Length: 315
Image 1 (cartoon, rainbow, N blue to C red):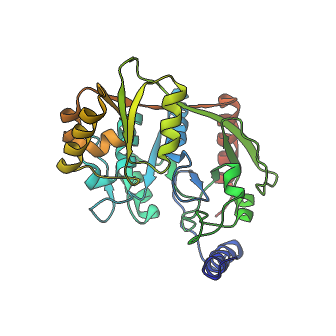
Image 2: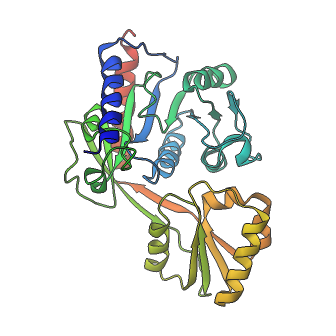
């Protein structure tokens, strides 16, 4: 193992042991907390899964809110997301969640403070903790981790993409595997293993398109478009969470003209980050992610039963 990765891994294990032993204390909210996270950096499908789970809760009439860090926002402190606002204020993913789910979303570096603000404004309700597996200071009643066989072949930061050793997966209550992949190599314990199918809602077009995106794994988006039969004249990619500028828009328009494409195709997250520039790229097809959870009713029943049991226990 790389010495830097070994040092990073030792620090992560030491921190986790302090929480496991109770040396580091937890902060408890009045409402139950369900965490959605992963053990890698970016691109695991946390946001689509959180939206899926939020939609299920809404279908069953269970009030919820979302607590998020607000990655790459230019503001500080704990604030409620205005769906009509800007990703610069709140971060692109919290803004996308607020627009798609229509539930309160609170961003803050301190997720406990975010939960307190949510409860002051909206009352105690179920909190969905976005990207919360490593945010151990906030007590949670249920931990969900999205994983893939690729994680088993990866290495710890800074040489790889793993935030934690694979052994940390045993801390989760449920591990979510995508697109019927097996959990080969993943160190799973007795937790639930759930499966989701993840694809895209292909745009109804036969035009030649220029695909562009600023996400963690652009190659997956391109492959999904091709599998859906979208005719691609070319592709262009940016770093994850890229905020588009007028120069980017000029470059994309020039590239579309040079390649002879008739339209653009991009992701919902990129549409959020384009803000007012989206109109300049018309015609542009914004492609939603579609995620389906196998045995969704049974999964939700299990989460709620576990949460209810654990919330009754004394802190």
